Length: 192
Image (cartoon, rainbow, N blue to C red):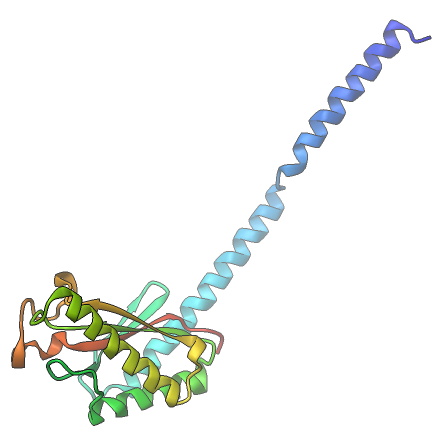
């Protein structure tokens, strides 16, 4: 037979047990601070890799009229390939740039993830321009893979002739060549 005091004690112990069980989901401040420090260090390391890749690309493409933009966590290489009107065939002078790019990526950034972004000038319909831009992006992706980059690390996307991505707004024909291009974005530099 239990007394009132022992029932209160059992009740109190039960409440404490429930309260402690609810605390299991909390993270200790020291563990949290350690995790945040590790994430910051990893972020800093990746940014250093991106910066090193940007510097290397600047050196390799100094002879070309190529614009390289370092974005947060990414690198964009503009003017990597240009195309004639209604064409998706790579030009010889662009192949040389792509060879240089593939060599740098193969030799120093084999785990990198890059995207070939295809564009068109506004001379065709939006649907036609989208398809043509994708053919251009695929041509660059395929060439980079042929040049030794892994197919898993090169993607292709198309932006067609969207106005906010045109180099020369509304330009077609000879003046629109800057719009008929593929740019390469390095989304992740990988481990050096």
